[in-house]
Amino acid sequence: MILKTKEFKEATNKILLALDSDKNASNLEIVAKGQALYLNVTNKEFYVSVKFALSEEVTFRAVVDASVFLTLISGLTTDEFSLDIKDTTVVIKAGKSSYKIAMIYENEALMTLPVIYIDNKTVEMPIKNDILQSILNVNSKEIQKGKNLININELQKLYYVDETGCFTFTTGATLNKFELEKPVKLLLNDRIVKLFRLFKDDVQFSLGQDKLSDGRVRTKVVFETPDTYVAAIINCDDILLSKVQGPCTATKRFISEAYAHSLVLSVNALSAAVSRLLLFTKTSIDKANMSQVKVDITITPDEFIIKDSLGNSESVPVENGSFVSDGYEMALNLSDLKLVLESCKNEHITLNCGNHRSIVITRGNVNNLIPEMKAN
Image (tube, rainbow, N blue to C red; front, side, top):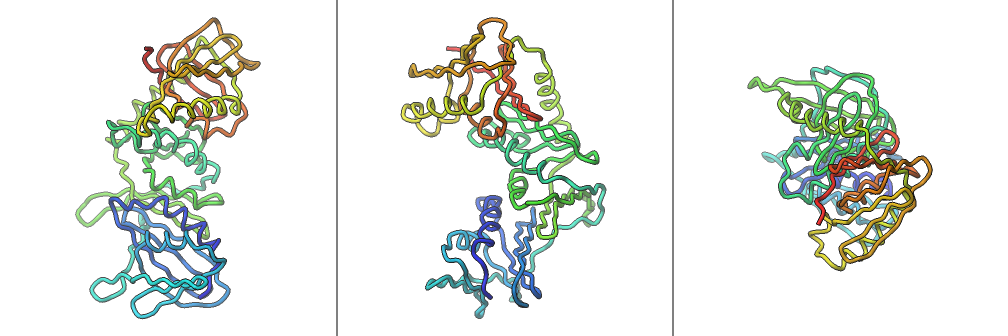
């Protein structure tokens, strides 16, 4: 069968981001039924199915190594490619190139991929795609910070979602406020959240707990549209949920605190200043330390001044709507500030500070907490 490369690449590139090749091998099932083709991927912790329309009726089923197939498709440059089965291999032809990928068998039969579904649903509701994409684009920046840290616990790798928003924390914290139709308490890992890239429309969400034969209970979630199905088994017990409540409550307390200084700053101006300073930092420290770039900050009623350890400085004007009672000095991690700005689609942010512990950056329904660093 002949397939359009562009449509396939969009899906394969997004699925690749969620594969964890270091720990769990993932398998991919290619199934054609009538005029529909399905790419099904699983590592037994998550299951993804993406549907594509075909121009002809085709019967086809193969199971191959997910990473090999998806990486190959993502690297094709032709407009079309063909997909066929020959003996025990999948044959892919693109232009004058030809590739063979061995199919995966179990006990001499083509492997069957287990589908993750929910027998006992406890919550069902629609979720707007804008909410999923905000979790992906905003909260993931906090999780990204944790990948450069040595002493990080498992809870700091998870997204806590309830009916009021999504909370993530590492050295700082991100509170992304939104409203869901029904109360839930979820802990999602980064792999699941990365799969939100597959969605272009609002999804139907399901949550449930299914009991295994040995009496254990597994919590499962499903996000689906007519063309995309994402399901996962999540670790979401009461002990973990109780542990995340403390940091979440503390973050909300910091956000609602009355700060001595409140600055309205241009996102474009501040982002440009940060990028210019990081140019010099990259040449002075090794790449491994780029996650910890300490800078000194001086605040006046008119300026937000950033000075690095090399003596370079940037000044960003304080705009209307600000309140600065007097001068204030602190030290921040410039890399943390950069990550916040990267996820910001607003023209301005409000930066609150003055307690000598942390700053709070607010833009719309999103609040970021960045700890102050010790002064030299």
